[in-house]
Image 1 (cartoon, rainbow, N blue to C red):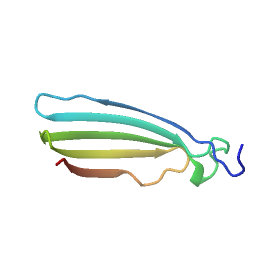
Image 2 (spheres, rainbow, N blue to C red; image 1 turned 90 degrees about the horizontal axis):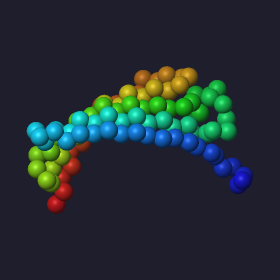
Image 3 (spheres, one colour; image 1 turned 90 degrees about the vertical axis):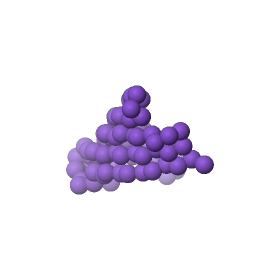
Image 4 (cartoon, rainbow, N blue to C red; image 1 turned 60 degrees about the horizontal axis):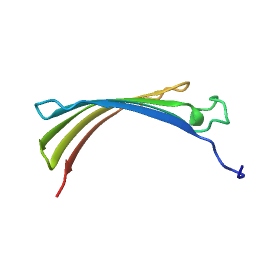
Length: 92
């Protein structure tokens, strides 16, 4: 073990489905432990769990509009840090 190294752990699961109306609903769940060697007693080391609810709209093969809501749930020290994200992707 290298002095000062930090062991982290996490995982994510995602499901999406393309509808015939160019809409793609998405649900994603992710968990991240920033330091597996420490307990979750401090606010900087609490396990983070994020659930994303989103929808993509495809205008054509080159343009996509993404709308996502990220519900962030910290295990011991809950913060008001949920996010709503809008992104437009254009490929050329």
